[in-house]
Length: 229
Image (cartoon, rainbow, N blue to C red; front, side, top):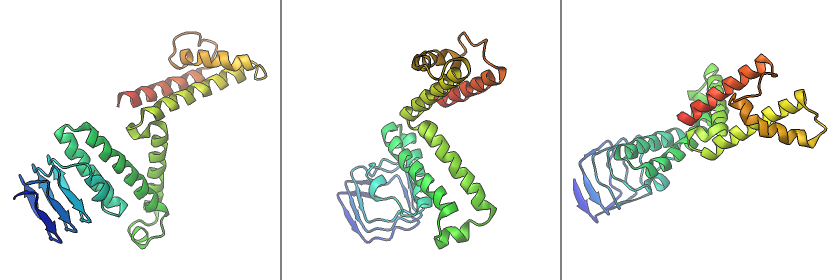
């Protein structure tokens, strides 16, 4: 399929396979792409207005990131699959910036989907997720929120450094309460200055309990894992 600056209006493309299609600078108005597969295609400059992309997938297809804003399905579970497919597609093309945009939408849709799966009173979620399944989804949502707080699920350096800062604060508080004077402000500052040495086990940790040092060591391993992933 080849087209340049063509306008498609109310066309039903459901379950079509666009393999090596060339559709540059085209306009698609209210078209239905449900279940479509886009493979090795070029859709650069094309606009999709009011189109439906439920269950659509993309592989090595050049397409503008605008589709992430105006082409996402309305339901969260379909939106995350749509964004995930585009994220993989952009990664295949080596477009890191576009992949990051897709990841942000995928993460937001995942959070919304998990939250609705255990809390929503909508009939779709109540029929699909029942009993212990809702409990497991609640646990999965909590894990997602925790990881999001710690490091933004791998997409936020700010949150990761914030988590490190909070760990240093906790270490400093422990040091002041157990080995300093909580009524002396300077002790808090000196303990905070010393906290990186404690966290990384550099020196001066012999006076601390084994349980505390083991907890610090485990925290250090987890932090290194986050930084390396």
